[in-house]
Image 1 (cartoon, rainbow, N blue to C red):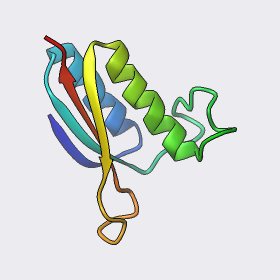
Image 2 (tube, rainbow, N blue to C red):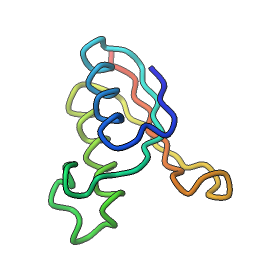
Image 3 (cartoon, rainbow, N blue to C red):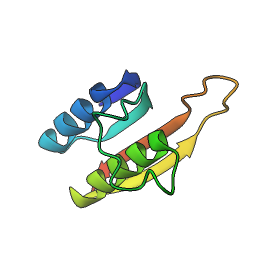
Length: 89
């Protein structure tokens, strides 16, 4: 499954569907909702949107996925964090 600029909760719904299907997933999260999305208690240490994405990566790992993260140049988009997950075999 692939989602680019998956606004707000759409990223979480894509991750849910990928986990349910045990599918590989690649997302470029966008438009974080600080009041609605889980920051995992990390907002005191991390910028809130990064905290949300860290929780997402942990969610994939907890679901049995190998996780890879990277960024693309912020000149392309300031929402530049990529999250990849592949089910462990």
